[in-house]
Length: 384
Ligand code: GLU
Image (tube, rainbow, N blue to C red; front, top):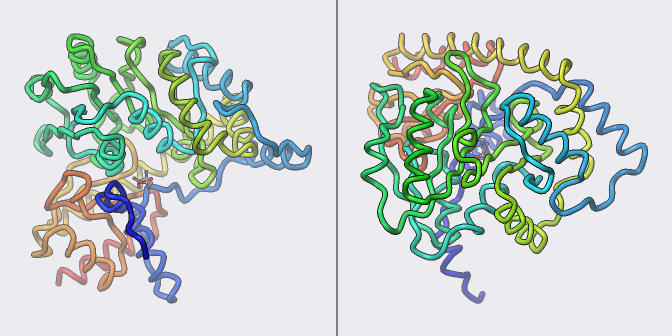
């Protein structure tokens, strides 16, 4: 066979996707697996969202849409940012893509030249460095510590900025740590971006899942250099529907759209109609988010208490639906620990390696309480 490209040979597989697939494979062999791998709500999407998708199918609204997403959806996204965040965007400042992942990829491709550096707090979500690498950029991680709640120190970020830095990525609530950054930290980071003329990419996917603290988007400080990355997957339980959206300055959005037009065109039409309902039927969606958030909080409390009781040190995450735990009691590095947990305890987790979190594994608690209790019992048995 002829050779593959260097770029693809150098690209690592996504460990969230890979470990989720491992858990799924084992389950397909008939093993009762508790999958706490991918961050995927176990809830079905709200009824009004499903109804909107059915209606779109029944009406035959299944053709190509505008590459950047259909206008009523971009208007609904703009209305959401106005209503919930006090931010004014026109529809031309919004792009709809196939998941938050594609919004990010479009953005890195649109802003990075070979050798450009991107600073970001670590632990970070696994796909940032991979996408930055594909765009020719270099990831410059700045470590945050469990002892300080994984909140970045703006001074440490400042020290990581060089003349080659082109962008900063922040993600609060954070996947994988669950950290919710205080407003003053986000403001300080935004000011650094402005001071050094950087693009600021704020991944706000977990905005609605905060248990302690409150949400701040970096876009409120310097919108002219900030891209918000958002989407329907987490808050509305629409993971498989693949709808992400970005909001930012018009020339950046236009550039991202040019790329998307050559790569995937529009995101799924039916899923776009469903997302319009999720965004516009505010009260029904609010009720769904409140219900799921309450469930996640209860699950978090059970899981974190349980892990700590087993000696698996896990600081309390304040947002999203992930918890990171130290694997020392398992006497393994994080990769071996994740494999052991899966093969012996039948509990799927993701190793911290590709999150920039050695010695840790990530568990998603977007799964039901019964499964969480089962996972804790199995881990306890394994430790014994
Ligand atoms: N974002 C989720 C996670 O971190 C889904 C998997 C992925 O896209 O990486 O688990």
